[in-house]
Image (cartoon, rainbow, N blue to C red):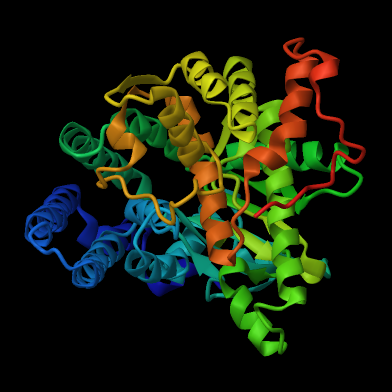
Amino acid sequence: MNALAFGYDFKEIQDKVSLHLRPWHRSFQFWVRAADIYTGYKVFQLRVSLVKDPQKKQAMWDKQHELAADKIYAMCYDLGGFFLKIAQIIGKPDLAPAAWVKRLVTLCDQAPATPFDAVQLVLEEEFGRSISEIFENFDVNPLGSAWIAQIHRARLRGDKNDVVVKVQHPGIQDLMMTDIRNLQAFALYIQKTDIKFDLFSVTKEMEKQIGYEFDFLREANAMERIRRFLYENNKKTPVLVPRVLRGLATRRVLVMDYIDGVPILNLGDEMDKRGINPGGKMATSAKQNILKSLTLAYGQMILKTGFFHADPHPGNILICKGSEVALLDYGQVKDLPDQLRLGFADLVLAMADSNPVKATESYRELGIDTVSNCKNEQQEMLRLAQTMFDTKLPPGVVMLQPFSEDASIKKISVQSFPEELFSVLRTVHLLRGLSVGLGINYSCAEQWRPIAEEALYNAGRLKGANRTKVSNPGRFFWRY
């Protein structure tokens, strides 16, 4: 099958795919919609402040969140591309209102797909051969489509096992910079008016990390490096990592082993099909194993080497037979400098010990510049650290509310935040979102303590007598 037989050339298909996504049109649509959502909340805050009845006030907030959720969903879906990634970041149970989460979570697997004609042209342009020469079978309909690429199931000629073919959407990279610039301008405004946090540095790190995602050869190298590390440092790897087919990897196409599993978002439906009580012992045990596997893998990656998968959103996690976890998509990885890796290890110990003095020192060591306007600064600093870098929500906190007057971010202003730490921050928040979604509130800092101590001990920054004695370093202790 040759796509040229359809009478298309690549430029024509690219124009058709991205016609409604011209930079000027995207900018206009973003600012009109973002301003509408933002001013809607600001006006609502004035209106709700006049209401005294707590139940009526909560009902009003719920209705406002539902209205905003529809608008945010429409904006992200219509603009597509980079805004699908934004939806993944903010659409988490611990960070966003329930109405937002309910709407935005579906964008993980509802990104518009590129027509197969364009996919075929990308494949044949990258490999220099027709699809039929390489693949015995190739599913025209994609298994899924995300903001940068879509994946197809296929089988190579002369092979009995299926593979996954990741193909980059044509034309998407040209639009990414427009989206990033708009978001950075909006972040600058928000951090001066409402959220006392260095959001601009966060968006700069996003710009750098997302730019890397367009190079699939870089992703292939990262996948192989993490796969080798996890498989060599554990008797049994905590998470499955796909094997790259090296001869079939280019900047825009990546072929890897197919892993059979259930997307974590569909875990509840799968349990229903099998007649498993989601609140029963079997389901609870499975959920604990899933979180244990992910937490152990990330603790080892971040604290032992500093090189880690930086995008554990639900769309990148499969649950396989026996509650095994597969971690997919290595387009976003981070390589932390040793100074930050060890500084974060110190912060992990401070959070695990609930030590406000150590947490304050760790923030300074990490280069997080803060300004306080509260009396109990050190205690509030610990609360801020646990809110930002631990999966367990602090006592009395069920959802992060940056606009709340009682929020730590209102009491302690984060003036500057190291761009390289954003990936750690985002990873912890995504893990927290998963734990909230699974109904298990646990502390990753407590689970990571032995790994953090080992990292500091190996660097000569912790004496052996001060290390926690753990008979089985792979064992995790769950506390609720």
